[in-house]
Amino acid sequence: MKDIAYVIGVDYGTDSVRSVLVNALNGEEISSSVYYYPRWQKGLHCIPSENQFRQHPLDYVEGLENTIKECISKAGADVAAQIKGISIDTTGSTPIAVDRAGTPLGLLPEFSENPNAMFVLWKDHTAIGEAAEINEHATKFDTNYLKYVGGIYSSEWFWAKLLHVLRVDEQVRNACFSWVEHCDWIPFLLIGGNDVMQLKRSVCAAGHKSLWAAEFGGLPPNNFFSSLDPLLDGFTDRLFKDAYPSDQAAGNLSQEWADRLGLGTDVVVGVGAFDAHMGAVGGQIEPYHLSKVMGTSTCDMLVAPIAEVEDKLVGGICGQVPGSVIPAMMGLEAGQSAFGDTYAWFKRLLIWPLEQLLSQSTVISAETAEALLQEVSDRIIPELTKQAEQLPLTESDAFAIDWFNGRRTPDANQLLKGAILGLGLGSDAPRVFRALVEATCFGAKSIVDRFEEQGVPVKGLIGLGGVARKSPFIMQMMADVMNMPIRIHKSEQTCAIGAAMFAATVAGVYDKVEEAMEAMGQGFDAEYFPDSTRTALYARRYEQYKVHGKAIENLVPPAKLQVTDKQEEVVR
Image (tube, rainbow, N blue to C red; front, side, top):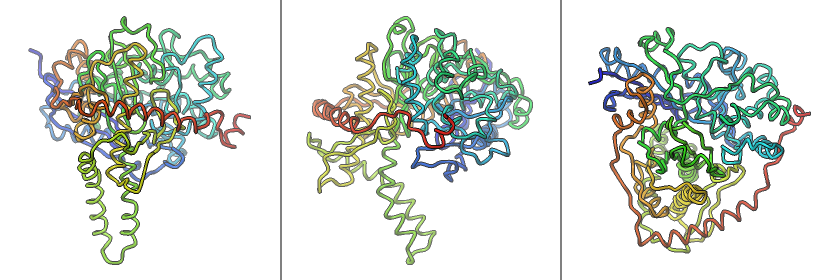
């Protein structure tokens, strides 16, 4: 019988950070805490119309301290004394410029309000031009440095964002010693790191977003980047050669953070990873079962024995990396740039007139208007769902294309736009909402098709995240469109629980993370099966979706050297 042990999993999402304190022996959640980023909520450093989304490192630091301390306070001193490990997952690719010590520039006084010194959030698409240049540049080399990231580099990723920031901001360019992912920086912070060259980079972020591969001896060589743009000359020497799976320790909690959190310095901090990768572990992923973390976007993870898939390169996905999910298996990543965000966009569209009219009202108070607006906002999606699921399904229903934030996979293209087609005077809000839901399900099916077309079978679906747990309507449509069952994991916090499983592994409670998954996993509490009366009709509509999508795609010019005048000056 193992001694009692507790661990903490920290999950950084787009809007908030959540920490959970878990019994490492059975997965029981002892306490949890959520912290919403205050600067992000105010929209600071973001320009949505330009696809600029930045987050201040203070939001992350304050959230880390607040949530862990609240978890410990709720659990009590006896539990706190038995905490053995902490592991972290974050969104990604969400990198930031740092100095030689590894301090994010946004934490320095002279950069405290500079968006280019902040974390460049995963959904920031300001580097579309740079991504296009990387894709074109890669064709000039005998070695295909893009082959392990699906053959297409994305504006959502590490190098494109670095090059964009270096080009547009001379002050940041001169102060930037290195470039660090969020999931790598938080463990470095907790262990008191003060030399960025000693920072342990995760194989998850390195392999899926940074072009790292063991075959290349690490990152591509300097001349790959210096010949792309002289601003990148020498940058690989200030980055990393080695990358580590998340069952390895980044180090022990520093004295400073031990004091701040009320813990001991014997607490082990694990190497970080991206949220969907740890979420797949928390959701008890199985070989060849696609684990779908469904929230604002989707991240789809699949694991397979390395020997069975190492000779198969799946084009147009977000990479395949040994050890990026489970250390002994190949991890393959795909996803959609907008999922829940698509529904949120439609809700904002519908509520806009009410917001404007209530803000101008002289009949009711501002407090009453705000309360009314909140009530209506909370009820829009449930009411749309209720009405949409009562509609008959016909082949002539309105269509939508789900690229409202560009397309992540298959075949990344962030210039693509969403569309709604086949509207008429009878196209009311529930019908448009149903078309949007169907489009997101069709987008999910296109990912499964890509895996299967290129020799990696998908034997089942696992649904994780808020949308999976909260919307039977969407999940039933997903099962019908995919024509395969989808199991819904019981845990509402699979990412944080996955981080806790890795924390238990790095702390030595388990020898490998598969053992932690088995002991700490909460299982599944729902399953949706395809409705045979609808699958054939969805299959026909899916073929039309592909035709409409190709037509939309043909309208979009390629993203080649789309730089601003300011960028051109830097390049010259």
